[in-house]
Length: 401
Image 1 (tube, helix red, strand yellow):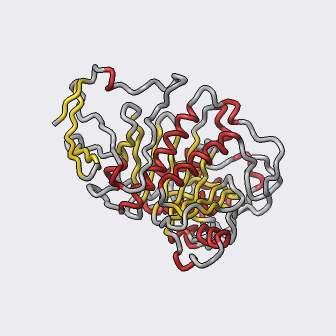
Image 2 (cartoon, rainbow, N blue to C red):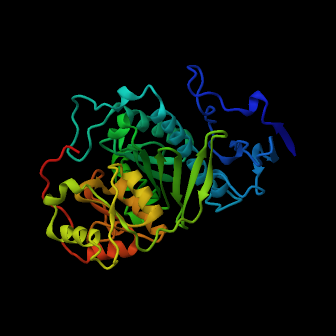
């Protein structure tokens, strides 16, 4: 047993605003769990830090069963779900990258990073990037490279997938910073990611071809998906295929702590989330559905309320907690790195992900930046919405956002 007074200087986190320091300690270059060191964390509020530790092959295992709040790494590791050493190492590097992005998003010096990049040749299937998007993309790419566990990364910020490591067992798809246009207004943003196994049967193909095909796997083949919400709290929500769980960042220790185990979305909510300003561009079926639920004339006899942030991760997070439906009815959101990971998460929580007609996870992607309508939420709400038939907005009057 080790006891350390909380009043000692070493027990306090380093201020993030000092020009020569960072919010979190340097990332260890770990390629296997044998040199991962999990940080100490609070076990009681009595003025002492109590940690019971045991060293096994340079792995520091912290036994913190007494407080009932495991960390993300504990929960995924051998003491919890035991998702496998390779995936635990990859998860460690992803959560480290997201801590860096969280610090960057909250920095008082990021205002110029939120502005759109001028010029450049941006394909019609991609949003115009901003410096903060690009920096976030580089942070994630660097972390995936250091993990040694990733063969391919496919990102919203890159025209084509990036081949990283022929021996990497995993493929990662990601939107590094969703909602970055909201940064200047301090509106929540987020990171979305999905993890597949590398298709070893494609190993004989040229790098560019096998990178592309590995990235275009159906969402039904996902083994892990998650998002990180950067808001009043930093929340890491993840599923390994056995439920959906959310962890909240404890800034005093740098750990993501389990705060929402085995999340279950209500089968019916009372909130819809969509840009109502586009009402007159919607198809008849979608207008009828919205008119019905907000008047209390749908299958649920209470009037629905509208809540819309225009930040996909934020709107989805609220929907996951409270139920209802979050949607964008036009061909706008990307199947590979937005719709698939979030649909995986909502299904694992008991909800549904749909394009208005079909289950999202059953759709086979044909290109990396493929767009589609997206409806995520409570199972009964999605079923009722689909019953109206014509809910996909196919006429697109050239919106800028």
